[in-house]
Image (cartoon, rainbow, N blue to C red; front, side, top):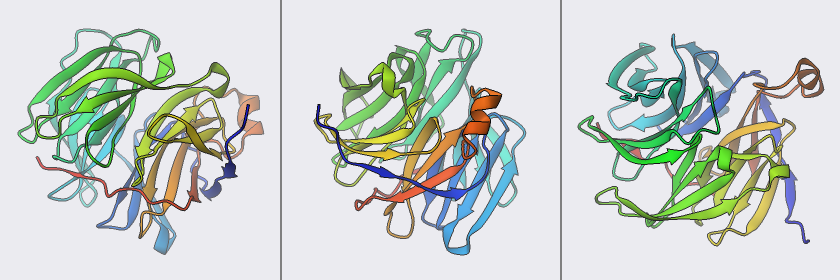
Length: 296
């Protein structure tokens, strides 16, 4: 079998996140935000200043989105909130209405009509098909869009807004849907990528300006770039086993930032992977797209 080209990410910051996730570039601040879910922290890195700060938020924050009026819209374990980096306060705005115990929100992203999408997972049984995909409207109405997933993970849209990509992690599949930008409706679910067992689990993802999908591999030591037909185009090797997500950032959106985790690693594995949980970056010769802003 022919192997695709492979490149290696560079180490950026030693943060030792237990569960680093959700990288998001804010062009207003020229900063990268991400979360450490298990340690209840939001991180911010300003590359031009080589400045890193982290903020304790008092509860688990799992995903981030830009907000049109400033600050961030976020998912907590049990709902949606606004977070202001100046005051560092969380303002809870919508709770998760879910009867299944042990369920929390996981990954999320804002679409180009300013709606925030996020999915859930059952923490006690990650393979249970109890995850659901939700959409938070600008008026703060929360709608359940689809159900029957395991760990709801990375979301992204094609540049023409006609396709939604959505990760069902424990099934090792990235799904594709026909997407209607005006209404937010999805249809025609089909597998886009199935990840072989030896390559880990698909986790967070992003889509570049050429419409290629970049997917992080939990347990797979890499990020893979897939073309719009699902063929592997490039692999980015990462010196950490649990690669969690990726996002384009930098002044021209030319750098791919990559988050990792130490969660589930044994003490010996942590010794063998001293960079696990850190932030990485690579310039791959293609640019990302500017992240939309939640309009609520």
